[in-house]
Amino acid sequence: MRRYNLFYFIGQGFQGIFRNGVMSVASIAVLMSCLVVLGGFALLVYNIDVNLEEFGLMNEIVVFVDREAGEEDIQRIEAEIRALDNVASVKRTTKAEALESMKQQSEEYAHLYEDIDETNNPLTDSFTIVYEDNDRVVTLAYLLGQIDGVRKVNNRLDLAVTMSNFKSGVLLIFTWFLIILFVVSLFVIINTIKLSVFSRRSEISIMRYVGATSWFITLPFLFEGVIIGLVSSAAAYFVEMYFYYYIEGMVLSDLQMISIIPPAAIQMPMLWAFLAIGVLSGIIGSSISLGKYLKA
Image (cartoon, rainbow, N blue to C red; front, side):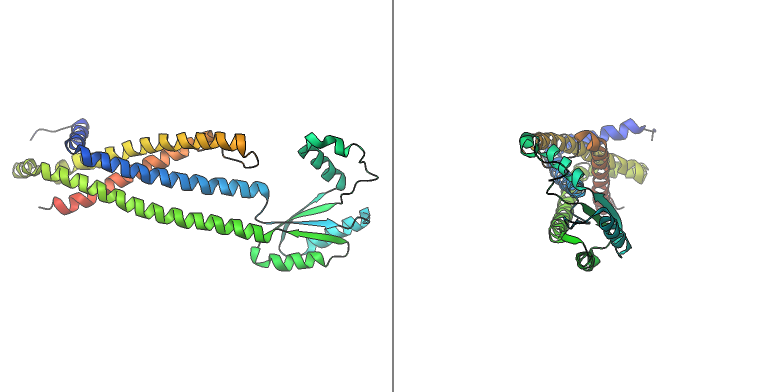
């Protein structure tokens, strides 16, 4: 039997796809849907993490000192805070800095701050504390409140826990959707390859009689699965990026308080991830089908 190069097997793979057009389209559509859902949940979780970091919800406590506290008292309070357990870092914000920050955040109401200066500044110095362990934050918040000169402890643990639980719920749903859609995708690909094997059963028998190796018979079907995976990956990528650009435009125009990762930062990682998952799905689906229907 004469030798064939790689293009022969790729050509045979394309022929198998066109021969079973309906099932091939179904395989591509299902795998594409799986990848779009997978990418959507992954981007959602990633953007949630970014926003949580920006909002400082996960591991921060803000401590406000008494209005009458002097510089020595403030330095003493800072030293006592740093001495506590479960404190990763401490950042001081003076009342002048806090006032300036408020002015920058409310430029349209700048006239309200015209008469406020150092002598009548109603704000107080504060400390932003980053803690290490969520399980011990209640104890830390209590100890901070016991420090002489501390007026208020702003502990946002409940909100942080709520957001963390929300992210965990999204991850759980994402995992189950991924498993279900991946299994469905494999099932459709397996059946597509089965039809291709069945339609070529006479040809396969002849090749066996004339001494064709298992790899020679198997490779066209493997390439068929890989091509299905590549086409699905490319389609899913363009669909995902279309919706992501649409959502980015909506967020930037209507929800400016929410940050969204620029598309340029996620395009290439998403493309490579889609290609890897698509090709892997095609190879697994083809291998399962061939392992059952091409036994000698």
